[in-house]
Image 1 (spheres, rainbow, N blue to C red):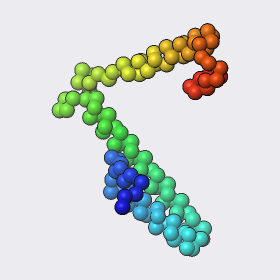
Image 2: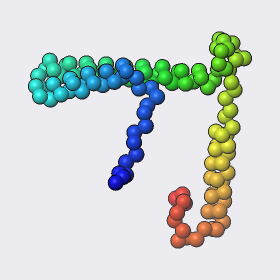
Image 3: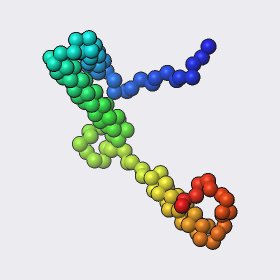
Image 4: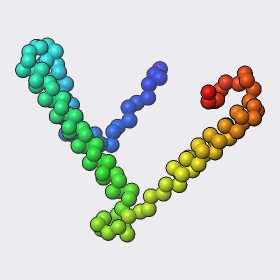
Length: 125
């Protein structure tokens, strides 16, 4: 029998430090839940903030490694600007142009009364 849920995809930035910090946070939460003292609350908050900090650092370093892998040529000096791959913004410009043309076309069709008054899908008020 199959379930409707898809399996979780692994995060590329998740590492051993993230796992250890998350485990420590869960352990502190369990202790605080069973024994709700002020010291346990402080310990839980400290573990939670440390887990958040470690996760953010891991995400940031993973993102920087990814950007360096797609921008720079392997084995080349990244200090030299000529060794970077160009980044194309054509798709962004095409999307912008498409939105502008669509907005103008809908405006003109609305002004001329081309649409039926009973049509309501995809119309702007």
